[in-house]
Length: 443
Image 1 (cartoon, rainbow, N blue to C red):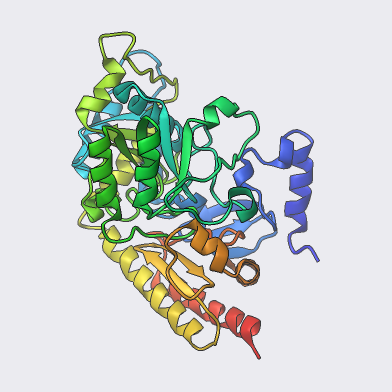
Image 2: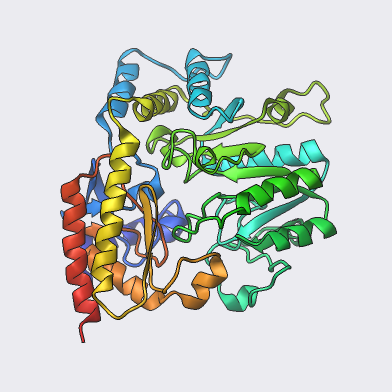
């Protein structure tokens, strides 16, 4: 029985004018629920149902939906007739760049884009210009955007990529048609937490860069093993390739200085998005000045193009400035609050599942979490694919949605706590989780 008839009707209506009925097919899910409003930690669908939200625009709304401080800053700029000129520099982009580099001191300069995918595209382009090499290493289970270099190997079927190999690489399991085979041959996929496979690829190909999420957060929460990120830094230095951290999801959610400030490994280039402007569309590429200078190299043959009419759009820049100011403010104590909520949720979920004879593991980093239905912390995608109970994972998510707890209804997708969540939200989530788990695991 369809619980969301209006959502289904809207999807069918949209399909007449939009292929698939939705403008980003990553949003399509089963069930397809159409949301009409979000305030703080809550969202409402067009049926009128209210949910405590842990999807948060794929983790973008770190302060919560329609944060009043961010929205008021944008409204004020509209009242002041702020415009998109398209000619010359703006004061806002300079303010934002300075504030960003103060928040992330490991980054010396930035450029602004409209999406995270654009930022990773530029990072790879810079790496190729710097090294004069073409090959790229990406992670099985990582997601770095929609473009040709990275559009593959997120949640793959083992029949498509094969069993675990180490050292070695996996076939490019494309997310899209239309990627030339000659281009795929430049991209080498290895498992996360596997330094031997990085060395294997580097010995065989001229590698321009390694690009990865420092924590894999598109297949839940898969953390680096001790020494892994440090090992990547060492291998990149020895090989002469660049190390790129894709912090589109980890950046600002885990620390004001990005996850690189936690792991104390400084990449050559970094990309950010999602939480930078609390859901307003912005991407950032930043890094060491000597690499960022490739955007303005005097030699045309070495210069990397960056262009975009909407890069640093004034309304988005204002939203980003307001977001970063709030994240950095001692008054709000954003990270202290979300980390306490994360601890409370992790402890509560662990206590609930410990009551039952069923394998589980609660993975968490700060405000990001994922419950796996396996008996240990995953180390890479193959570990999850071989051990997680995907059918139970799906049913668990659907039952929670029916009770008003929303996370994306696809197994192993990350949940995200926002600054707008309260202790009451967490406790209600745990109460409803207990009810769901009791029903699913009853003897």
